[in-house]
Length: 399
Image 1 (tube, rainbow, N blue to C red):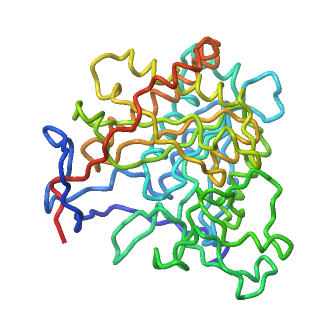
Image 2: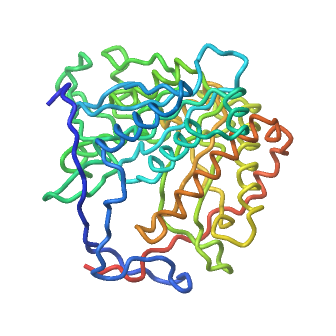
Image 3: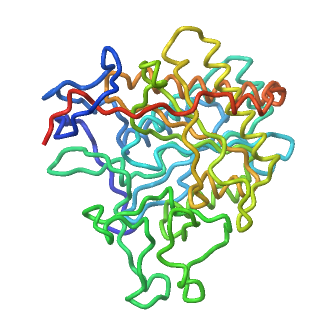
């Protein structure tokens, strides 16, 4: 099906399957967990056909504010859409690139992106006009359509990876060449095979795998990726065209308590640094890191100003050292970064979690447009509460 665009209408339900019974500590009252045998409805998630329709309907009403492009396509022909507000060659504007759903099983980033696109395109608010006068904003709402639409036995079971196999001859390599370490199928982690696209980036944006560098295979998580996925190359190409000042990546993770003492549940973890500052092979610019910390701390402060609400349950994501992620590679190319890691809690909290991202992104635009982000002390970021203990669904069915 190479080169053929497939659209799959998704209007199905998924029944919670076996999980792991969690030991203490647990949250009280055990949060928005799905109950045993409870049906989890996924109709509200945007299918690929709906994504196309929504984007072009927004475009039609935008009165020239935005453009919609197909920036690339996946191995199986799914389009990767890009919404543009402003041009790459406008050097007077601050440039922002946002990426959603690089992991197919982490869907709310795409939902948040669609709402942000709608607000930027259709609002008559003078504040939006001011934002678009000062910022160029490009948004890829769903980078991994294959993972987002993946089905088993006719049911949607979104998965982390794409559906691409390892084909060494594509890179002029011998058939015995090992695949990259993040090719799940070859290493027994996934069936059918697929790549974790968020390990496929490289700080050298012109890197091409071939016989001269095949000795780098299979690599590991502390090293760059190889740009072997069409999705990874697509976001790389968009990045090279825009050269953003700011890059924001939208994800999910599991569930954490706020701390050993505070058993409330974290709704969002954020991160400003994904590559160690002291690396000699891939040096991170301290000024880029400070700007990243300012953006993250600004969003944290704005959400906390909302008072006693779930939006204030924010932590710092655990330290990582991952130059093969989009965040890592792009920060090493001079872009300030912010990672959103939403709690994953099925449909009971999806609306609230999506809204938290929308608010955070819109506040970032405001802070960049009016300059208030640049007044934040980068050290404020280091005071954000670190990640608390991880917990699992206490109602999950044990195998």
